[in-house]
Amino acid sequence: MSGLSATRTCLVVLGASLAAGSAAGTASAAAALQKRLQEIAVEKQELYNCSIGIAVETGAGLVVSAGNDGSFAWGSVTKLATGAALMQQVAARRISLDTPVAPLIDPLLVREGLGRMHVLFGPRADSITLEHLLAMKSGIPDYDTATPYPPPPTDAFRKDAAEWPPARLLNLSYVRKGKLEFEPGAHWAYSSTNFVLAGLLLARLSNATRWDAYGQAALLSPLPAQRRSSYALDFASHGTPAAHGAVRGFDRTSYNGANASARPGVDVSDVAGVFGGWTASDIVAPPASVARLARGEARVRPLRRQRPAAARSPVRRRDDPRRQRCGGRGAERLGAGRAAPERRPRRLGRLAPPRGGEGPARRERGRDCVGVGLATFNLSIMGVTGQSSLSPYAVSYGHLGATYGYDSIAAYFPAIDAAVSIGTSIETDSQTAPSDTLCLVYNALLAAVRGTAEPRCSFSKESYFGGRCDCGNTYACHKLLRKCVKSELGSLSKEDCSRTC
Image (cartoon, rainbow, N blue to C red):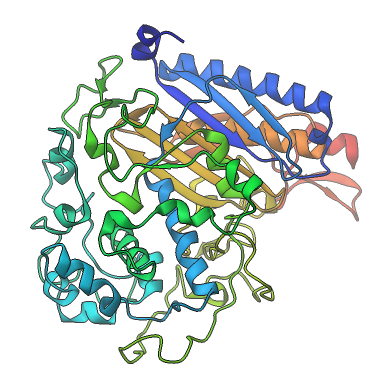
């Protein structure tokens, strides 16, 4: 693609992983899937005035790709990697989920010219644990979406080429306001600041003397050399998208001060603020590497809580009320059922899935359960799969990503052991391009895995990043009646159900 063409379009990149042993395991099925993904890419290119690239990887090593396979900025999808890195530390018993983090983070904060956590966020900040950070339950204000509004507090990030290291973010007046938004563990609120602090924690655990002396690529160190080399993850702790070879991203958001209807949008190639957030938002990678991260060694799995090693924390463990309707603590309180027995840490870190992550999406007391796990979201409630809410094929967890010029999503589907990553080189007000693309891609993937006809799906926007993927997959075979009936557990079209019932 020429540079001129790139300025006129966005790039949506998708990576997926198919279940081993499926119908898509054959060369012919792979070719058919590749063709279908290319068709989806072209369709969404026309809809969003963007070009699309697709990469597919199976658990058995099958790779199917279509379109552009360049590197993208993945925004908050980075949190999957940061969470996995910290869970490696938990598995190695260097820290536990119940460890108060202030004594570990404070020395780096002071070295960066900031006060200790209780100075930045109030006295209760000393009770914030690792789990509070990873599950968004700390009460720490969000540098990215906090008040004042309007204008958005992030507006300053895009105005110059200056970088936004942790100290600059944490020193913002609406972040370091000397108090928390709520008592740690009381409930949850999304705050990317948690993962900036998580990065400082990783730096301290690796004996780094400065924040940027910590190498985020250490996440891959447990892997065999050959497997490690298959990842092309670049962590942009410094520099701009152009400096890291990312595809050109374009800001089309009105809330960032851009003209939302202008095409191609504001070029963010030289805006260092794209990576403001460090370990919360700095991965630059091709889609295949992000899909591998989501499905492979770092895929989310139930976590067995461990007792902290003796004398790991200089601060006495505190008990606090952390049970609530939506969300919870560890695999046991995340609704994952009994956690799988832990063996040796398998390659990368284990992330606990959101509540309901091991079963169908569900509603609690008439409302959707938010479903936040450790560095993961319950994506099932977003309605992007096109499957019945009680079907196992609706279950998905992973992370969304949004930063200047780029929207993305990485999702894992346990029912078929498959992951899909979608990155775009536009940021829009609705940010639905990744979810819209996922609607068609997942159902094409699911049909290939199950050996069924692909349903005709449509997507309608309903919320920020989310919407409704409608595929008509609401039929199931009633064994007693021996006929197809509509069911909340249904996952087949009427035609497929009639053919197989």
